[in-house]
Amino acid sequence: MNVVVLVKYVPDPQGTPRLGEDHLVVREGTDGTLDPGDEHAVEAALQVAEAHGGEVTLVSMGPDVAMSAVRKGLSMGADRGVLVTDPALRGADTLATAKVLAAAVARQRFDLVLSGVESTDGYTGTLPMAVAELLGLPSLTFARTLEVDESSVRIERQTDLGFDVLESPMPVLVSVTGAANEPRYATLKGIMSAKTKPVEQLGLADLGLAEDDVRPGQRVVAVTAAPVKGPGEIVEGDEAVARIADLLTGTTVT
Amino acid sequence: MSTVWVYAEIGPEGPEGSSLELLTKARELGDTVAAVALGPGATAAAQLLGEHGAATVFASDDPIFADAVAQPAAHALAELAGRHAPNMILFASSHESRDVAGRIQARIGASLMANATDVPSLDRAITRIFGDSSIVEVELGGPDPRLVLVRPKSFAVEPSGGTAEVVPVDVQIPDDLRVARRVERHAEAATGPKLEDAKVVVSGGRGLQDPTNFALLDRLAAEIGGAAVGATRAVVDAGWVPYSQQIGQTGKTVKPEVYVAVGISGATQHVVGMRGSKRIVAVNKDPQAPIFGLADLGVVADALSFVPKLIAELERRRGAP
Image (cartoon, rainbow over all chains, first blue to last red; front, side, top):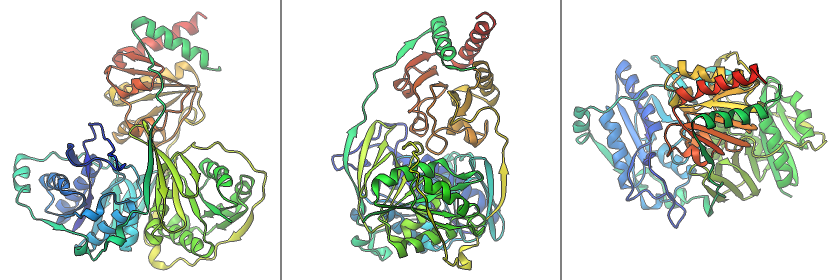
């Protein structure tokens, strides 16, 4: 059973992200990493491959520095990577990204496509479905659990009232939440072997796409600082207990 | 003549509140407003959708829209949009709406804006990023309809007093779009008052360390009286409490009179769901935690020692008013 995982390089989520003068997130020259949300997708893929056999392929789009995210996934245990890098993709919107990823996935042999639910830097949360639509695949998104048998996939997805159980035959795309598993740490051996695992580097033309296909349909026209609230008051010890109790007893209607 | 559509979600009790919020906004944006409602209860929902501004409701009660995942709804909505050419479609931020919007974007090559906090015009949307510290205005180009997913509670619901004409949806759903199925639905019994309605929300994060400690917040909420208990995504992901208690980007949005954040650092994911609270109290042992930038009243303390003291004080006051 072959699994493709969509992975993204993001600025270090512990750091302070910033926008450049062109209103795009600065990616070069900053610490970046594999999106922590995507680690759950890689982990899910590794577990599927361990249980059913088959290869795990990571597919990513990003500048040259994004190779570090692919290597991170390889060091966890994925078999190979595909990284699409092209100057025309700078500032790519979600539609362009979906087209590129779908085209790169279509070149692979796969039974299952896995992804995180939303990126840590963009939070759009619609990319996996767009990729599924372009590939003509069904999708089970926001999976908090994932069960795979020989020909079908079953997930639990949280709802306002509880949870639903969703099922689909393969091939299918599944996006997993952080609840799905605990990602493994890369071992030293994994890190060493990741350096020699194959990563195919592709440009737009390799995917049969032209610049016109990925021209952003949307762009940021203004960025302004949100009005800053005055700093709050810091209180301590018994005074803190009393002040909060005042606030709470003054508010409740019982 | 501009036309704005709302992709309406229908719950067990009728249209979701988010759909009515979107209709209220759509009236400002479009000369003509319509809603698309798919699945059991759709036709019955038309009255309420009409009363909030939908002049037309494209409705289908076909259970396939509830029984199969994403593809039938995306197909029907895309077909309808192809025939009637709306300029914009507004969506809620739920899993279902994201499923449908993402697929429609791919299908028609439209621009899509998620997490919008406002929609000033038919080609503009506004969101906030980096912990809501920056306001970003995005120009939406590409072909119509532009797709915008709006954060919950961005707009107040106001009835228009209108009436909707119901137009049955006659789109055929191909068999190959019916393969992903919803096979079970489970309701988890919710306890206590509803998060969205509570005057006080007590909410906990990883700082509480384990599920047993998290139960302290239930005691605190009970002692306050009528308070609801919320949680961060990290806590829900760890399985301490059910998803119905999650506050934030992928959970609920609350705007109580007082929000008490206990052991919560203040990640973007969380703050977007509670920053509209009237007063915010934060208890965290890390003085650098971003939550203090948002709090009206901050206490630098270990939650595990502070919360019992607060409960004891509230008990004392109740005993001796």
